[in-house]
Image (cartoon, rainbow, N blue to C red; front, side):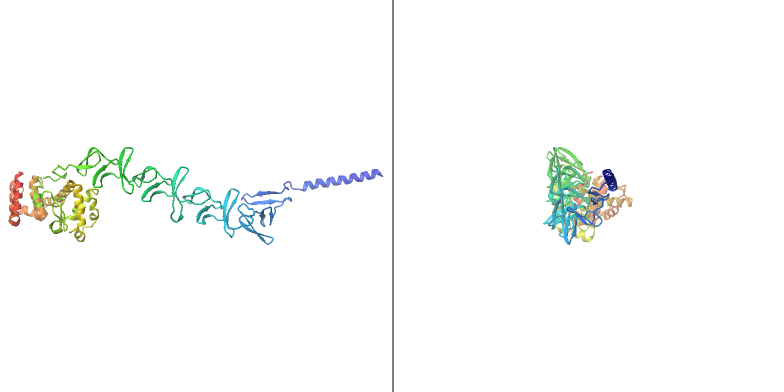
Length: 483
């Protein structure tokens, strides 16, 4: 009897053992509850039964109907609304504003929308990236640089970041860092392509600038490394001959001002003193020009020996030594002078821009502003202005007469300057073509001696213009004295 009982117990224990082993074998090896993540970054939860949990809360996190963690959304659970943030965690008592999740900050609207891009909160501008994370520090956004402080607020104006100086645009609270040449507060600054303020020598659009330690461009006179430079009010380093406050100075191609030397510019020689001022040789009787005094012997009878600076002659019609008339040669002379030396003749700039029309020529008649410009230039550079008047008059009157005579078979090119001067005198008073006709009418040819040339031409002039007899006789006597 006892044995039978023992055999029954043995069978029962064996059956239980078999069933336990079978249960263990059929359970999944990963049955432990755990969070998992897909290749796309979505989180899901595996329960103790080894299955994905769906449509319910796991702690402070909510899983949707597909079993994935919900983020940045309102969730309705059992008739109640809950808001979960960027990390999926429920935010109790949610309302719009800033939320710190982990070590990062996010901003949500009252509807629960996470802000991205630029936006303004209480008058301050912020930027959150595409993931909603608030940015701080120096940042490059859409090709431009911006600066945000530790609170995320955008900063404006001058800022120093890691030892570099930047300027962030204030207008419309744009906030981007300036690049290139910029004018602020009447001064120019230069910023690199990355927005860093530059110092020292910089080349911008083929012009040279010097930016001081505070970033401002140098203007006016500057001593740099023992050399003297001059910069315009726009900060551009000047070169060549410059008129500064009524005095002439010369600067090399490297911008350094010349001192204690002699230079020749546009055919005019200057003595440069220790202060850098360029002084013309006032004792040079030729005035630095290419027309000899023998050829110009007649000019003292034309308008006086020192008439280069006169204005408003002939009732407001003419200016200068040769009485350049507004109806004919005055405007062309202005253009001639300015084209040769726009620095010394800078006051002529607005008039040199005139087109050669009768209407524009008439604007110079009796023009007091123009007369003051003429006198200012003459006071500044008398010899240079005188030489330009001589050269222009010769070009417009004598040279034309010489060409007309050549066409008539009379060559005076190799005659003495005083003989040429007698022809020059006639052309100044009556015109180039009339002077050529007078030479021919006076019976002058290539075989006529120089003395006879002068006598015949003045005899012809006196017979045709007897009112000028006294002047012509004086001119003739002086001309003959040169032979």
